[in-house]
Image 1 (cartoon, rainbow, N blue to C red):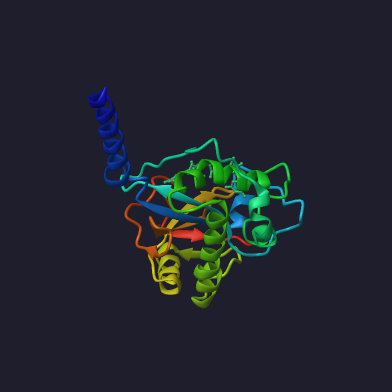
Image 2: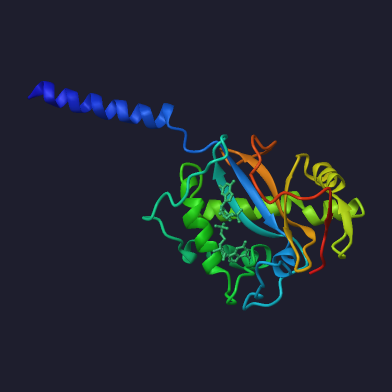
Length: 228
Ligand code: 5GP
Ligand code: 5GP
């Protein structure tokens, strides 16, 4: 009896050690922002403005995504912790402004935020609760000021074409870190600036150089920065 008991205790201790020391939740985060003009004029999708009105002419948040160094990522990690808007009621005004949804049909944002929390956020529960997850992500948008960094370098969302290198340099100058730029195509087939990826360490506190860049969404050497 006693040996069965101590066997169980040992098993528990081993399992706890495995969680603490061996299994790594995830390695870093991608912080992803989208250019609304490129979501809306893309060949693949049209867009719908949120029920709260046309978003500001600025980058919007897409999400904060836990990732592994090999490029893969966990998703939908905890169905027992669904999105609950009442947990972030103090952030809603800020969310509407900085994390607007552009998908159709028009919504106020809950569908998008809920998708992001449930797919990605739940995989970062070791560092964030729902409130921290959204608050931290909103803070990153203020910290990185992408549009300002680009404008300072003379890169404006006016439909003209810029060199990818100049765009990356401007963001590196502004944020201190090298971004990954994802492009999509407008309805005429031009490659355009769609999303900007920066990386955050796995404690969710500081921007870092990205350990690995996503596949796909490659840009040409010259890309368009459409208006919105
Ligand atoms: P897409 O196929 O449009 O690049 O990505 C579709 C969705 O897959 C993204 O919005 C995001 O939720 C997820 N995703 C794509 N690439 C990555 C990645 O490298 N890391 C993580 N964590 N999620 C990704
Ligand atoms: P991902 O898996 O790509 O992070 O999540 C994108 C999902 O959120 C898609 O189902 C998409 O329809 C929805 N969504 C809602 N609003 C937006 C938006 O403004 N941008 C993007 N990329 N996806 C949105």
